[in-house]
Length: 429
Image (cartoon, rainbow, N blue to C red; front, side, top):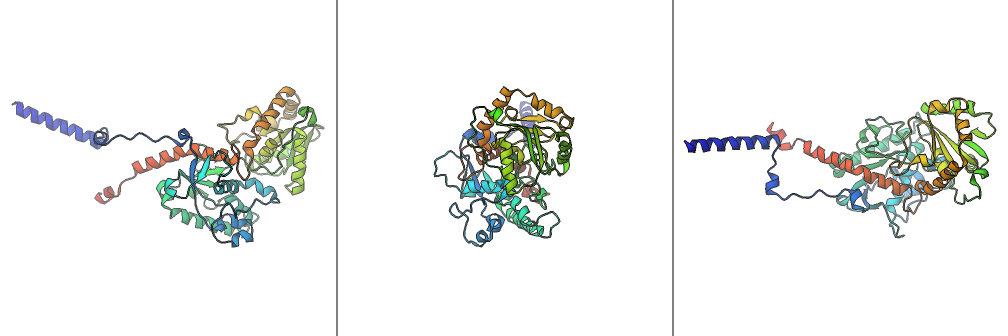
């Protein structure tokens, strides 16, 4: 009798254990294999981000900077990397891709701390950088969206996708640990949706659907400022030294939210302490904007074709307190930098109320303005793109943002592996 009971109990226990294993509530691996501690995240280790940079043909990057660079053979190195052209004018604002590539080519012999270092072995990389100058490609291949020359841009995008899809590292992660700059509103416009899993370096989300670009995986970069930085801004009385209350100089005909510029022109015209001037970005006009910002207490930043524009970062390096008018703007490095310490924000509704914006600025306390001016001088180095790169400059900050995004990318990769149906199960079915 007891023997039958013992057999029945054994069978019942075996059945329960089998069901638990099948349902996944019991994992016997923990009994037979040592449990490995989870690796520390990159942010916790404090070490530089290890980045593998794809060795793409020159036509994808420096070849667009002139025939001389397109005809050269061999890999691009720190020694033969072309300097950014001094007369590039407004094209400089979309050159983030250039400075990121330059930072990875730099050998770091200056001894400064670095946020990202290039590795030659992709197996050791934390992230993969794709050095396609997608923004420069927009301005190099055609002058507008309907220009037949844009076919050259489309062909580069098609060829690049083929290269990535043949990479086992891209296949392994589905591109989630790949870093791709797209700072021009029309960058990679033909095949953009096919890269929506990657970490995109963008300046705002104006031209990107939520299914493609989000703060959870992508990095918001500053535009590269086009005015010269104000390096000797040390007057005895900075408030009185800046005689203009509010300054704006730029194109007033824009799309989407940028249509507010025409309305603001009508509201602000006629105020003696306001300079609201229509202009296009020529070298001479950039010089006039530089002078105007340095002589102004506040610099107006309404939306352009997208919620952000280069003007905000021109104001920051000119130490002119930005007046941001937008309902949708996203700002770079906002998890590290509090913009309310040196900027003033108005909704579009507030800005379009006649007299409201100017009266608020006229009543703004001098001591608060001086504090904002001092803060601008303290943070402006975070918006500098330069070579060689320097600690805590814009490129340094961008790579740190990438490091923050990678744990989410790695989580997605690990979940994808776990949820993927194994081949042996497909054959069984």
